Image 1 (tube, helix red, strand yellow):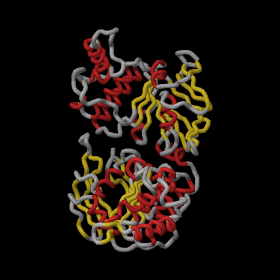
Image 2 (image 1 turned 90 degrees about the vertical axis):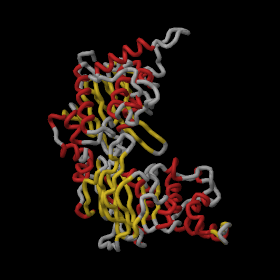
Image 3 (image 1 turned 135 degrees about the horizontal axis):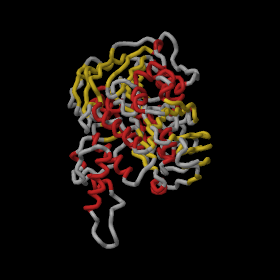
Length: 506
């Protein structure tokens, strides 16, 4: 392969095995020179894992990578940069208290021996990069003063500063306004004219059709299809992404629901970047109903849950729980006492106390219900509820006194759900309840959700997995770009319609 060949980079037989998970399975992937190479797939398809391998962040379990026909090994991001490969991650990695030039050259400052940093040359090269990106941003400007779209372009400039030939962009428009997206697209087109090859990851279908030259689809860790964007349409992408695997349903026919438990009206929340992360969202959840919120990364699902529980106080709109108004300034603890409870998305960071026992993790959220004489905890009551919860949720433990970090992910998730149930909720919020657990544990969690709904508990849960949302939802809400783009009964829902709705609102 020479510099004139259309394919600049290839993977052959690349697999990535994590404990218990085959993230990539024998992937053959071609990257086309000077093109915008779009890569797309459902959550868990393997996109990010493959890109991290190409960027030197992770090393594959097996397989090979070729660049311009030569076999290469990428043991680090520094090694990838040496080969002209750079990656701009979705989360910006800038120091806001430093200037644009200081950020671009951070960690690779222009310095000779013991002499001071050559700030003049760094600023000159930064100015040149900004001209290349058609941006009138001063090298001395503090990053904190830039808009999010401009900060994204500074990240791109950081990658280009190392003479990048292949630039990987991971969800680059997730926090950008429409105007900023148009600027980014103009920059991308200019870079491809300059000979830079772009690998572009996104879930936004219409966006991909607008910017992409070649599209590659991954499904369940495997290569599914590759085509030129000019030869395909959105329905083709949806078909290739979803396949024809049957959906398992955990719901019995003829389910009935009670009175409204949660009523949300025009909930709006503006994020740090000044963009509405939840935008005028209204919906209702009834007693005994399981309502699923489907959306992709950046859709606003987690932010909506934070508004509902009150961990995010800076929101507008009205909430009612069992027809009682929920004041905006009401603390999360008081909302829990009203009958609302949340199982967070990031179990390890915000869901468990890793060095505490299973018993302590279960009861920490409801100790106020087991106080004797208002100052001491009733150990007898605590032990009784722990025993009942472990039994009812089939939590596999040798003793309630073992530390929770000794449990499997699925059993940890059951403990977190059990803690929420001990607050006697009328509304249970579950943010990505199956994240990080195996297939068997997922089925246990879904059966548990159905059982709780049959007891009259209203359940609102979020997921970015289409199979899950179809399997356990009585009704499906779709969020995209902070907006509610669909509200569909499960019986009338089609996977292709949900995917299209998840790409709206941008």
